[in-house]
Image (cartoon, rainbow, N blue to C red; front, side):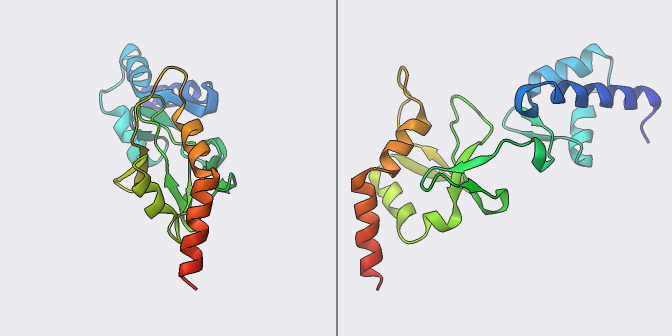
Length: 164
């Protein structure tokens, strides 16, 4: 059972994360805060195990839906329920996902067409860009241009016609 000092430090950690834009903090920053306050090294892992925070890809965030940024589908631009999300990771820029795909949008040949294009790859349940980031090139912008292009939409239309 945590003592009063641990409870105070836990509250400081949560306040620190709440103060960040999107309620997401860099894991290293949170660990520095805990160390500076004299907290135990395993406090962050303990808080994550209790569900007070979530730790993923070097980021710490509050797990409540209200704190998480909305996730948009790169194909239809609709808001994706996190239970129905196939994430799109912008690994070199942001470890946290705020873009992805509806599972339904990937059915009917879209995922196969995306992989065949060579622009995307699948790993561990997520989709990653398979191209180099260049000066001023945002992977989301590149993905949107491709996924909403006439060529991609025409290829999907052809695949859906074959399925009838």
